[in-house]
Image (cartoon, rainbow, N blue to C red; front, top):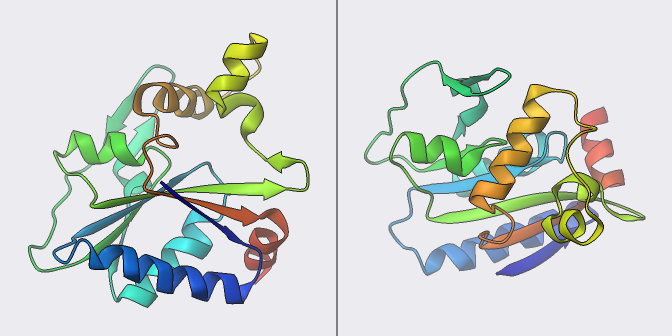
Length: 177
């Protein structure tokens, strides 16, 4: 697993070069999966940048589902063009791709970082939850519960090929544009 930090535009460009080199090890790649919490910068910043940089299509996995209190409801089928390359972006990335019997060649997990550390750490960090006996009782939305379940079942951070840590200031700058 590689870890990379982005705090400015130069870092983002450098990450594009790094990703291109990683993909050299996968010459027949079809899908790069971008996973991460909501508002981490994965869709508005990273997915758009990578798709443009690699001349790939964006596959918005969140558009294929609805989340209710107890389950994920798949709302449409997923068709992959045989010769196209995709950047698959979504909060339940591996689970949605699994549902369609598809996997990404490279998985990137995006973490939004604040001056105190990872912004979602309190409720998604498995070690913290285990060490301090934290639970998900404070999570009120069905989407929060599904994201927590997904992290426990799929371990997207632990199984990522690349962890991309983006400064909160940089993500906020991008949202403002």
